[in-house]
Each structure stands twice: as C-alpha cells, then as structure tokens.
Image (cartoon, rainbow over all chains, first blue to last red; front, side, top):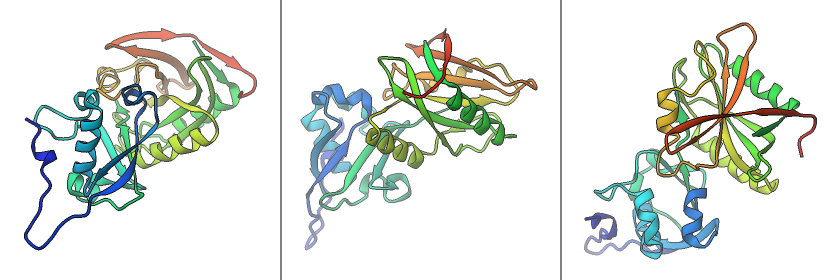
Length: 109
Length: 141
C-alpha cells in the first residue's frame, strides 16, 4: 500500500507548512488532468505534493509510482531549477509558489 | 516521417561529432502533427560514456520551457552511436518504453562508425521499432 507518501511527518512542537505549488506535468500525464500542462497541488514536501497530485488524479499514480509507493526510477522531479535527488528526494521541502516539474528520464545506449 | 531542416541536421551532426569519444545527445523540438523539427537542443550526456547516454535533466527542463515559449513541442531525442549502426539498441528500446515515455516521440540515431555520419529516425511504440523516412527541408517552420 502506498501509505508512506500520505503520512505527514509531524514531530512534537514542530509542524511543516502545507503550501500550494504548481506542478508541471510531463506530456503523457496531461490527458489525466484534462490536457492541462500545469496543475495545482498542496504539500509541505515533494512527497506530499505528489501524494496530493495522485489523490486528485488517481490515474497518474500507476505511471509515477511503483507498487511500494516510491517514485518510479525513470522519473525526474525538479523544484524550480533543482533536482530533488540532490536535495532531500521525497522529503525535499517546498515553498509557496514553487514550481515542481515532473519529467521523464531520457536515456539510452 | 520526420521533416528535418538542413540547418538542424547539421547542428545535430556537429554536436554528435563534438561529443566524441562519447555518445552525444539532445532533444528535437517542433510539431508532432506535421512531423516537423524546427530546432534542436543539444544537451550534455550525463553518462559521459561511449556506450550510454543520459540527457541532463536540468537541460531537458530548460529545453521544455524554451520550446513552450517558442510555441514548439519537444518531439523527440537524438543521440549518437560511436561504433555501431544508426539503429536503436536494446537499451534504447527499453528506455523508450518507460511509464512516462511519450509514444509520439521520434528517435533520431546518428552513427559515427564510418567517416561519413549516418542519420536515421525511428518510432519506438510498445517496444516495436519502425524506421521512418527523414525528409530534408530548407527552412525551419
């Protein structure tokens, strides 16, 4: 079950701020959002934003997430101009107005 | 069919040659419906390998944003094979078949095996490779 992305880590005396962000969708996910390139989502971290996104658009989950709820291997996620794998991955914090971009990894041999 | 302006073809070949001894890669932008390339975005091969390529994701993001500003779509990717044919490898086919791979994409292969580079284009849909003609045109749209 993909529960861990839906759990907001809350420690005593400390609360993460859930903020609205823009999510830029890769082309193959846009049909699930009525053709929109950019949709809104909310969260305190990238993990929460993606959980909110797949909650709003459940059809996206299968293409974004693996069976154990982690981000698919060949997906790149950026917060503004920064790759989250070099920040805190799914725990990367987001600020209000950030643009989260989801892109396919383009590679071969 | 892929309509490719001569100027863009030259840029693709130039980027591939300048990437030697490694594979080079980049994105092509234009219009899916017309099968037409307007420009390319040469990118860094993050794998820095003569056998593998990975388009730098940040450059991919920048290319997406720039293409959007220009009213273009990213319609595919080009990369070079330094010692083998201009035909998609098994790795190329696998990586064209991920959950976020766009089935409309054109896959341009450039072989640098022989003194004269060879450029071919393919569609890869449901793991099936089919070559498409590349029609050289004079000007980008």
